[in-house]
Image 1: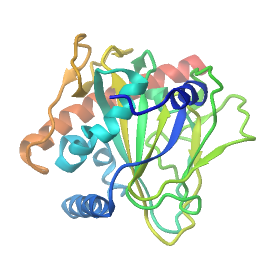
Image 2: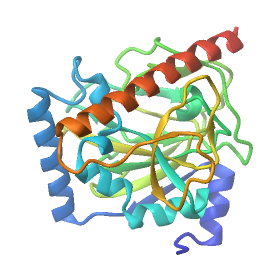
Image 3: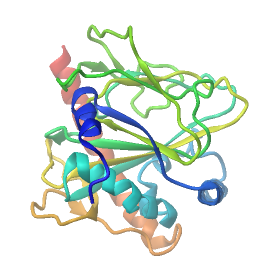
Image 4: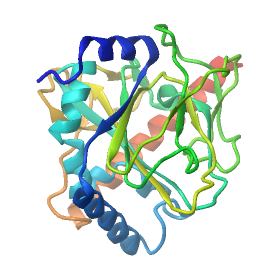
Length: 282
């Protein structure tokens, strides 16, 4: 089902991002935030807390409500128009900035350390609370129809919302960023090679975002680790990934074991790609 028109697809190919798109009504937003609260109660603290790093990612493997979002036709119809009919969700991340917090994301590209080839990935970023400019919404830079991997340094950005604390370290024209504010329940889409950043949360509310990262099934791991992925639309005719299933119950033992396995593979592949990228950037 085509939902994006020719001008939107052309803008994606030129700029690498599209926004905003409506998704959830007020009741659905409340239900998602109740799900966040249940998850944090189970964790015994915030998802973005020091001891909860692995639980920020791949929540669709332990939380059925996140798995439902990852398979929601209102999202996948948009992604299919950009990436094709056969789709995996490869990872996901909660991006949370506490009220009045210095948490930021420096200029970066999502695909840098994923260890995927080709770098065809789209992040659907869903605002579970208002993500306006005061709350530190994302800012995008067009890749001007020429997406390419830029050099990054990792573990260098203080107060980073990103797991790798990474930043682009080659010359980058940041004179004309485009702010992408989102109302609660709306989403944006950006390409894995689209440079973007976000500022601190200067607002009085907690900014909660959920990024869902989709790839076409022909994409393959570029390193030695065979990642896990969950088929969300179409079919897998390639067998490049270890397939995982969505949870049947919230945070049950089987779901937690699946999450542990998938996250271990993701971590190892990420670290391998991080080291490889550092060597290439010398």
